[in-house]
Picture 1: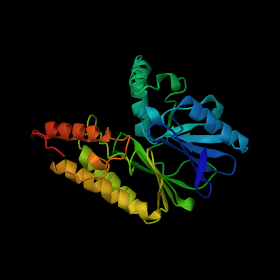
Picture 2: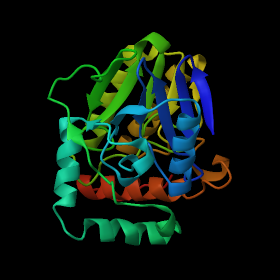
Picture 3: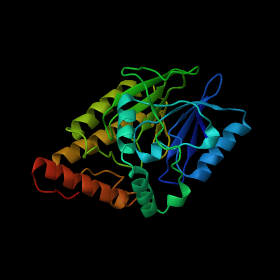
Length: 278
């Protein structure tokens, strides 16, 4: 079910790790951001749009991870954009003939393999480098590209609606997840991205994370500061005291502590030091 979070901006939440698809209404149709995840949910979203007489005129994927690269036939053949880095990462992934099988194997581990269709997976068109806004006939949507979490990651700021679509950042349930496999400086990349988000935070009244709860104006700065504190503690090997991990984690999200432990271990390996417990 679509829920309005600002004028002309609606969110459809998946039961899979509280994934948020974002719909932005324009003059001739809607912009659909991160459409996923499960087939019945995508069909429900398509039905909601059809029932209100709206069509998808453009899609956008905030970054090249599988749950942000899905699509449904009922959304039509609208162009689906991503940054140059995002599109390049997807092309590289799909150049491996076993890529979709590997995704299916991963989905089987989560128990949703039969609920996710990959037929239209990753059909992303790269926007030219330096593109500042989504090319469409609707509200101005600023592209804020960075390298935190994944190559070619982008947040979107819907300026007239004062909504920040953060991609996989600024979550109330997920800690910052660094790109510890592909980035030369994952900590520096993440801190730089948070500075970019800080630049628009004063104008944002709503923040929509890729996973988790939508936040109001008072939460935008707080989420940025909480993510920054976590990353700095992770960098320094200190216990972060973050409410998203350990005993204070939300019920059902206890596994996030394992993600934290894994990041701590990998950062220690990269730096050549021993691990530090949270």
